[in-house]
Structures are given as structure tokens and as C-alpha cells.
Image (cartoon, rainbow, N blue to C red; front, side, top):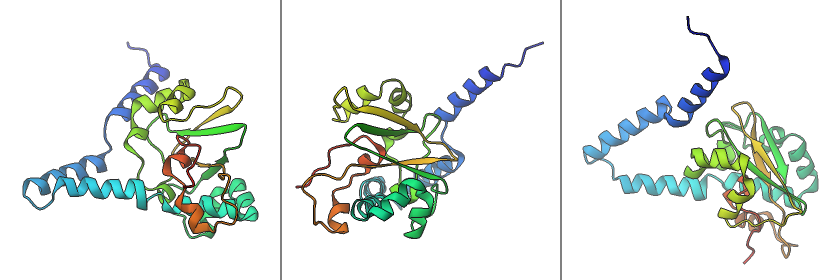
Length: 211
């Protein structure tokens, strides 16, 4: 009689979970394929819209949250204390941010967010997760060798900067609060939000450009 081993079952589950698309994703892909086949949808248009939402529209809420935290010390304290309550006060609560924790980058600390089991992500403030966030290579290496992963994104950290890796789950999502760049004193929240990148809120970007 075969012996039940929970650790082996868990490994199999994780492997399947990481490689198989979800049922809704399969349905969407099938529908898209059908519409493309019938000439009703141009796949290039779909790709363009996904890119716009991933890179531009989606993360705008998160950028506004970051900008407000930089400009308003009281809001920053509230955000770090209870991320969900703080974004709810702005009307930004929604999909996958029911339990949100915000972690702050400092001169001595850099934070990196990953989801090792799948691609849990705070959709309501960051939009669609980038493709690389869902890759098994990123999910595994971000934990094992975060400095090497960051270097591939162009983030080269001094040895005395601590790297903290946060593993998102279906119960708890993370967002990074980047450091406010020097030279932005007197900027309003819209100006500040314009320099915040999606990758900075995941942790694969650090030094934000001001010009």
C-alpha cells in the first residue's frame, strides 16, 4: 500500500499550480482565440491594451498612494500601520487588497516583493502583474538570490544595504513604499506620482528619475 506523504503532495501541488493556467485564464484565452479566428479582434490591439493597463493605467493608483505618503506624514504613518485601511480611505480598496502591508525602502533597507507559489498581487492599486512577476524563475530566484535578480533589473545595491524579501499570498499582499528622491521638495502630489514606477512598488526599481 502506498504511503501518503504530505510533503510530496505539497510539492506536486506547487508544481502544478505554477505551470497550469487558472480556469478563467484558459477560458479567456479560448475566447480570444475564437474572436481572432473570426477576425473580430486584432491580437496586436489586445496586446497593446494589456501593455497600457499593465504599465500605465493600472499602477496609477499605487503611484498616487506613494505620492500622498511622501507629501503627508500622517498618511504615511497610517499607510505603514494599516495599508488596507489607508487605501480604503482614498477609495482605492478592491481586488486583492483586503489585506495589504506596505513596506518602506530606506537608505539602509531595500524591499522586494515576490509570490513564490503563484502570482498574488495587489491588483486594485497596481493593475495587472507584469509577465516576469509570474515566471517561475523570478519567483524562485528572488528568494534565493535577490541581489542577483535586482542587479538584472539595474538595481545594484551596496553591501551594507539590507535586502528584505516579502512573499505575497492570497491572504496578504505587499507593496513597497519607495524612497522619495532628492530634489523633489515643493512638488505637489501629481508631480510626485508621475515619477513613481510600477517596478519601484514591487521593489525591482530603486532610484527614481526626477527629470
